[in-house]
Length: 341
Image 1 (spheres, rainbow, N blue to C red):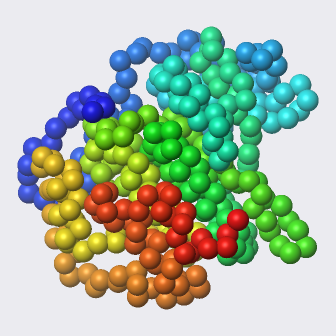
Image 2 (image 1 turned 60 degrees about the vertical axis):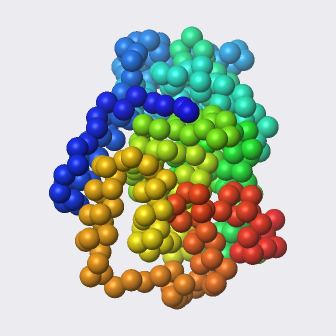
């Protein structure tokens, strides 16, 4: 069993939903940024005041740093936009912690066609170089008219990326729309999705069959599986729940939280989580606060794209009990993807 140190244990208390979720948010921050290493920006060789300098990759190519795309703070580091001598845009990403582990993950995924892989590295500065792809699934569905066939293609290829990871015993742990990169083309027939890549494997973990991840709250708050909110156990099925939540706004064009189960599904989840008093408090609070809310099961949803096959796919992906969710390969064979290449 793969275990990550958990520094905080919640004591059983009255199930006040706001208080519980606030405390879980604090736990997330303290777990997510916990590190035993004392790494500064100076250790990467690229200080915050020197973002216009050039760096050289292991390949011998030079990269001119243009701007900071994202500053995650230490120990997670920064993401830079850079250009090559040929003015090709690339992404330079600091990997201040777990450098060897990240490289091992990418080595194991080197044949995965739907994963964005490093094109170069700077080992002495703990940096990886990636192809720059501007568009992602979130921006696509927010800004452009996308034919249903192309939405299905983007989702199917994303699912193929998840399946490729799971085939080499790697879980992504941070599936969300802006981690799904796209390349598209405009043709006389309309917009066409030409390429889909899953990115950001910084939370990815290698898990042998029968093992799981315990004690870390990984992934984005809005797209996280129930067991990920609980700090584990997490496994391949956790990626599928997150993917199921991603699928919904691509069709509805708005984000909404959805769980496929009634209270019996909650009990199945709690059984899966085992001896986890803090999570039982959370779910008791959620169930309590929703007793008077009118239920709206997915099979009753109406609107464009809301056919029975779509609803059945979402139900299979978002079962509260991870043991009841469909796998990536089962999802790829689902009727909703029939005829999608």
